[in-house]
Every structure is written in C-alpha cells, then in structure tokens.
Length: 310
Ligand code: XMP
Image (tube, rainbow, N blue to C red):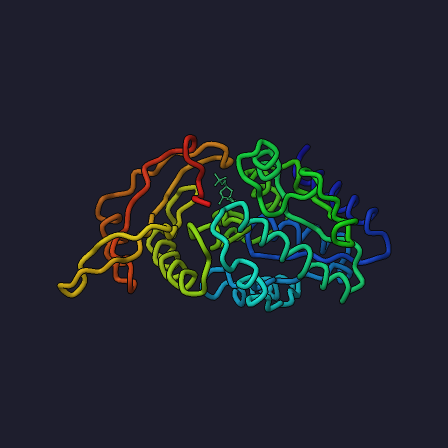
C-alpha cells in the first residue's frame, strides 16, 4: 500500500472506531508517537487529547521541547507531571522485565486510566510498531507498550480500548509515513528512543541520581554524534562499578558504555567504526561527569547482543 493510501485508511479506521467520542494519546516526540498524533489529529481534530507524560525518564529539556514543537504544528499537547509516580514504581527493581512491567503498569493502569477518566475518552491511540510486537511475542523482551498480543485485554484491565494504527509498519515504514504527513525532517528521521526511555539505559535500579548521570552522558553523546548517518547512538550506565583514579586518589566509580549502531529496522545491527579521535573525545567528556571513571565502546552486533542493555 502506498503511504498516502495507508494514511487515508488509518484516518478512516480511527474515525469509524472512535465514532462521536474522543480519544487520548501520549506523545513522546519520537517518530512513532508523532505519526500517531498526526493521524489521530487528522481523524478526530480536537477530540484527540494529546498528552506528554513526564515520567522523569526523558532526556534533558525533552518535555518542554516536544510540547513546543507540536504547538508550532498546531497541535496542543498537555504536559502531565508523573515523575514521582514512575520513580516510586521503579524503586528497588533491578530486573529488566520487572522494570518494564512497572513502567507499563504506571502508564496504563495509573496515568492513562486517570487521563481517560478526566477527559471522558474511551480510546487510547498507541504507537506500537511491528518490531515491538514481534520481539515481545518471540520472548526477546517485553516492549512496554505491548498488551493485547500477550493476552492483556486493555478494556477489562484498564477501562479503555487501544488503537494501534502503526502495527503493520517497521521503523523505516513509519519514517516514510511521517514524511508524507508533512512532519518536519528532524522528527521523521529522529533516532529511535526506547519506550522505557532512560530506564532502559540504566542497568539495575533506576534512581534520581543515576538518571541525572545518564542524562548528562546522553546529552554528551547526542551532541558529539549529532548528524552522524547511523541508526542509533546512546550512552548506558552499567550496574557494576570500576576502580579509577581521580585527583591522585582511588575512586570506585561508574562505568558508562557508548553504543553506536547501524540498522535498517532494528532486527539486526552492526557496530559503527567511529573515528578514534571522536571516541577519544567522547570518553574524555564522559569521564568528566562526577563519579564516572570509565567509558567503554561496545563492539557487539545484534545478534548476539540486543541494541539496548535492558
Ligand atoms: P533492542 O534492544 O530490542 O531494541 O535491540 C530494538 C530497537 O527498539 C528500540 N526500543 C526499545 N527497546 N524496550 C527496548 O529495550 C523498549 O520498550 C523499546 N522501545 C523501542 C531500541 O532503542 C532499538 O532501536
């Protein structure tokens, strides 16, 4: 199906399903949720209530930046402060799947349930793509936004139905639809960022302190590699610590991994051969972050690794 026909079909389906009611959606600023926002807005106009949920797991300045970008596109997105709720749900959890489950529950059972009650909406529009479904069903990892495919009935469990207009597309298809919808190139080409956000970039327990650290490392990597023609680059904070030397004294500090990979659709990935000078510079900047005394570059393709660590 060509992209214009895909858009028309999805707009029609959203309109028919929602009928005269209204729907909500959560915009994160990534290409998937941005495309869903555009489709939903085209189908429903102001009967689509768009929210940016600040879950404390986003990158530096991201909530405000995304809301501003969509305001310029004529789509109001309301900022919801759910930072404390997510941090308390993640407290004490170290297992990746438990962390994902806590994020899922906080989004779906708490925040979205509250938002549908407040708006009177019966539907949630969702940016799930085919790769999310496949990897979850294959048991590789539970993507935070997968419900029906693993037997959760959102209407019974949470009190609203979920529409997934992108469920047949992969990332490359979503980007093409984004361009056809007229989304700016910086959104259409935006690097993937996982649903569990920086919680997927911390191995082990997520705390406000670790989030602050990984947020700084992320900002450095994104600044240094901006414009690189690669699929994805990011920093991850490992759960282990390492010995280092700071100001002539022993320090037992944090280890940050730099990852930079090429991929078409995230099913397989190869490692980018970054110039040594660039690696060196990133390492120097990352180890200037207090308590970080080691920065390593991950040479593992997917498979056997996945792209993210969590
Ligand atoms: P993995 O780590 O499975 O990631 O190779 C494939 C792509 O999906 C992005 N992504 C996620 N990864 N949990 C994840 O671990 C999620 O909920 C999620 N959502 C998206 C990831 O960044 C990579 O591009």
